[in-house]
Length: 298
Image (cartoon, rainbow, N blue to C red; front, side):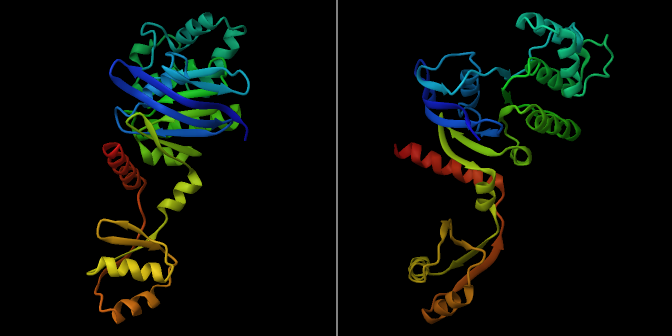
């Protein structure tokens, strides 16, 4: 993949609030990238900067070549008394598009609204239909880069499934690069190629879907009555480990019998031992907690 854009120490300051704090990362052409963070992490501010709605206080967005942007940020900006086609015609006039009728029909088909009653006003649409119409408006001129802020928020399971299929279709058949902000981590796992985790205006971590799966794979947990001596034993046996509360976390494939033998020899009581797969939500909350600790220390 080649790079679509690169953020170079982007900052956004609102009076005394630093909403986006020296953020740097790149987005590759053709990827679906998930932006994750709690409320107030700076996600929407960053998306508004990327979409050109606001300017950063400092920093640069570097581009290898010009590209068209489509965006759905916060609530869909629909004309309530217009139909789906009417809303798209309104956008087509603003964009000065040629072949309006053909492009409108293609956008409606892409989001599954081509069979909707042409006289039905958008104010009478369901939430799912409004979200799909908003995406049709964002992709009307077939942008290279699509920005979606919480596109499945409030949708029922069927609506979430439909939105997922639309997003995957836009990448596979229209070759769009897509950046999605969402709180629904389980759904992001089904569509994104890479994650960017934000906390208090900063980027905590970036990792690919493959790297996340490696982080979340099943691991071996054990606890003892003498954690410091246990830590020394693990180091002496060159067993990689992490610590979480009262547990040592080891790779699943660890040959545990030599370690248990050594624990017995050193009169260390093995309190618990079990396999466990980490959920994305737990991993994310752990990252946020670590980020909070780092923020307090700084």
